[in-house]
Structure formats: structure tokens, C-alpha cells
Length: 189
Image (tube, rainbow, N blue to C red; front, side, top):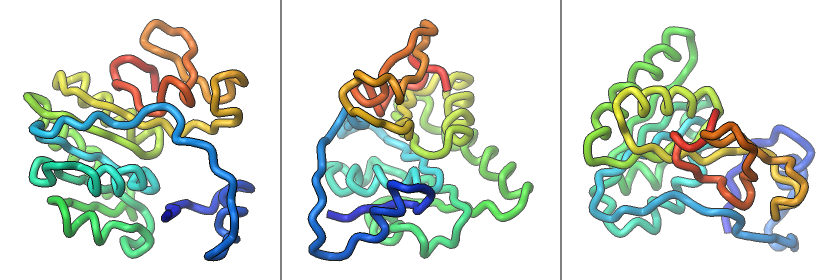
């Protein structure tokens, strides 16, 4: 098992302290994952740590020629496990170091989404503003987009309501049991 984490809090700090051979109790998988449509051109939009779910997706996808990865990041590229993915599928990476870079990334997301709007599938994971941008372009172009939410999950069974988001009808829905992957037009970001 490989963990891809960004050390930002108590939980990830404890994970970062683990050593090979340490025992860890795990529970999962929880919820649902991204759609796999073997014969459909599929764009993978990853922002920063949002690259993580695409490693396994690429590894298991039966038609790698139908996948393209667009990866936007802030830290140096060597901080991410991009190398093996880039060897397997067509990839484009953009780094954000300046405000101009951010606008370039936003513009490129718009271009990419438009290219996959007709007959394609777009999968997205990253910071909420990144996913909001992808959702905005998907709605404008009528593209099919799934997003993987990174909400904090406490209980994992839908009881505590700590991970909820609002659906397209304005009602709360549990991310741990009904997500973390949702069709972007069915939730609010």
C-alpha cells in the first residue's frame, strides 16, 4: 500500500510518522469512486494533492489510450507521484507560482473541458476552488463531470453528519456514504 498525503494536521502528521512494518487499522473503502467508461475519452483534472485518486484509476483502467491527465500544482513536480502516471497516459502539467500562472491554469481548464464536452467524461479532484472552476466550465459547455470531494470524514457511516455537502436540491447529503464522488451538476460546491 502506498499513501500519498500532505502533512497538514494531526491525522496526516501521525500518518507521516509511520515506518515500514508499522501496523495500522483501516476501514474502507467507503462510498463510491469515479466512473470507468472504457471506450469514452476521459479527462482527469487533478489539482495538487487531488492527484492521489488518479494513480489507482490509471493503473486499473483497461484503455489507457482513452485517458488524458491535466495536473495543476504549486509545489515542485518531484513532490508528486506523477512520473509513473505520465509514462502511462498523455499528461500536461502546469505549476502555479504567480497570479499569472493561476489565470493560465484557469484558462487551460476551460480549454480542456470544452474539448471533452461532447462525448467525453471528465473526472476532477483537487482543492474546492479548482473543482468549482471545472464545474463552472462543465456547466457552460454541457460536459459530464464528476468531482471527488475531500471533506473531513469522522464516522464514515453517515451518522455524524460531519462531512455533508448540499445537493442540487439544497438538501444535505453525506459525502462518506453518498460520495465522495458526485456528478458535479448534482451538488453545490
